[in-house]
Structures are given as C-alpha cells and as structure tokens.
Image (cartoon, rainbow, N blue to C red):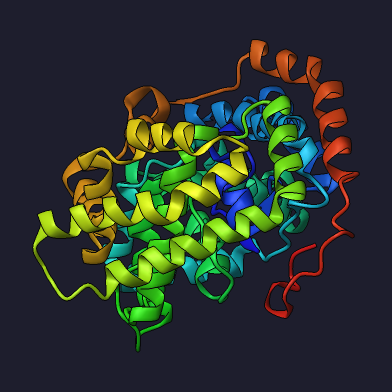
Length: 410
C-alpha cells in the first residue's frame, strides 16, 4: 500500500497500471475542506466583498473559482478509476490542522530554513491546489474565529508587498507537506517537481539520515527500488495510465485474475535487480548488455503469461519497447541515484516556477474589487458546487484499514 501525494486526486496523478499491479493498493486524497460551513464561506466571500466595496489582489478572486475546480477534477477522476475502487484504490479525506497556529509554525520553519522557500519557488505546484489550501485556511479556520471581517484583514496583512502572499501560500503548502515527511508510509509522487522540496523536508525531519529522497542506501533498498523501476519500465508502454474507465476495468480484471502471474513477474524483476545491483563492474556498456540479456532470459516467460501472448510476440514487445539502449540506460541510472539528482538539478536550473510567476505578475497583485461577473458566476454555479461536494462527502473508506500512523486520515 502506498499514499499518492502531496496533492489531491486529479487527472495528472491517475495511476499507472504498473503501480496498481505492483503496490496492490493505492490511497488517494480528496481536496481539503469538507465542512458545509467552509463551502458556504468561500461561495459568499466575493459577495461580501462586492457589497462592501473591498479590494484585494486579483489573484484572490481567481482563487475563489480555482478552489472549486479541485472538486470537479476529483469527481471526474473518481469516475475514470471507479472499476479500481474498493479493491485496488481507496479514496480518503485528510484531516489536519490548518489554523493560524499551524501556519505560523510553517512560517517559522521557512524563516529558519531559507532554502525551503527557494525550493518551494521552483516547484510547479498546481494553482488549484494552492487555492484550495489557502482558502481552506483563511475562509474556514480564520473565518470561524473572526468572520469575514477578520478574513479580509488577514488577507490585507499578507498582501502588503509582492512576496507576502507568496510566503503565505508557501506556508500553507509546507503545512500539508509535513503530513507526508513525518510518516513512514511510502509516498508515490506523479508530479515530479515536488521531489526536491520534499527531499529538503525529509532531511529536516530526519536529520540523522541522508538528504536524498531515497534515504536508505543499503543494497537491499537499492535492489527493491531497482525492481520497482524495472517492473514499471516493462509494463508502462504496454498498459500506460488508467485514464479511461475501460482501461481501469481491464487493469482491475488483470490485477484480480492474474495475481499469480504478476507476482511471478515481480519475482523475476527482483532476481534481475539483485544480479545487476551486485554486478562487480562499473563498465556502463557491460552493465547494459548484462541487463538486456537478463531481461530476455527472465522476463519473457512471466510477461507472456500475464499478457497471454506466445514467447515470440512477447520477445517482440521487449525488443521494440524495452531493450532500447536509452531505456536500459535510464533504468541503470537508478544505481547512481541519477533519477533524483537530475530532478534536483533541473529544478535548480529552472528558476522560479510558472505558478509563482503567475501569482507575482502585476495583474494578479493589483488590488481590485470583485466583479459583478465573478459574484453572479459563482452564485450560478452554487448548486453544482454543492452537489459535487455532497458526492465527495458520500465517499466511504470503510474498505481499508489504515496504518496506525495514518489514523488522522478518514
């Protein structure tokens, strides 16, 4: 079982078939905020500010719409992976503190570790995700204590200069990331630009360990990680992502009926991984040749059994998609942890992300009153938003027993 994060269920993080086969159970999180009071607060906030001629940065009004897009994306994604639910995919809701005290602790963490803020600026976070976390903090936690007037003052206090709002957004997202770096359960990340920031936080919360995402450098850990990546590399071009209901149905059927064959393929991938990891040579070409040879010898039969294809056809698949030198080289890069280093280097070279640039652009920072179009548009969509939230609230997770360290999720 693995947790998919750090964001919410959406089309960008639909599971690969290989992950369903390999991990057997995936847990996805719904958008933060399930209380009717929060939904009402966000829906009515533009109206309150419109009626009272209150100007705030334009990005706040955009976020009032983006907040609700998370729910729509989640319901659409749930429909796509519905055949996988109950047995292979569990949908959960995260319950964690987002009040002033929790966010202030994140602010303090950012102040004490400036590199965290730099890491955040390079992360290509989803603006919908940022909007939901921010408004769930201000228009629920702050609103409960201080009402709309207090929420307005809080926004004003945090938008005095271009960086203030960005620091607040960084704090609310760091607050969520704490959930994932403080638990031992495996985290599966599909939006890879989160790796460097999570890597930094893992180091902060586990100072006695390595600073790499793959903390454990033991041979047994490297073998297990190599096995997983080899298994993924073999199956990804064949099955891809579960991005249609028919694909999800097919994957669910295979995962149920072909458990023995899947386990056999995993076992052979482990055998290959063990031999490659412990191969007493650093010669790249020799390693590539050895890995290619072992894939032919050990993977052809179990893969054919899973696909119900004759050996000749399976060998053709391997030759066409897997045994390319570039693919083999990519798998072998795991042994040097290049997959992590490349991500960190790429993020460092990229500078600030498009999301940060969008938030800091002049139009986003300009303080304006909410438009009549925004107010009436949100009100017209109210019934749809409320129905989507009711659908999400009806989702049960009774079919899963969460580990004790994840008991704060329900």
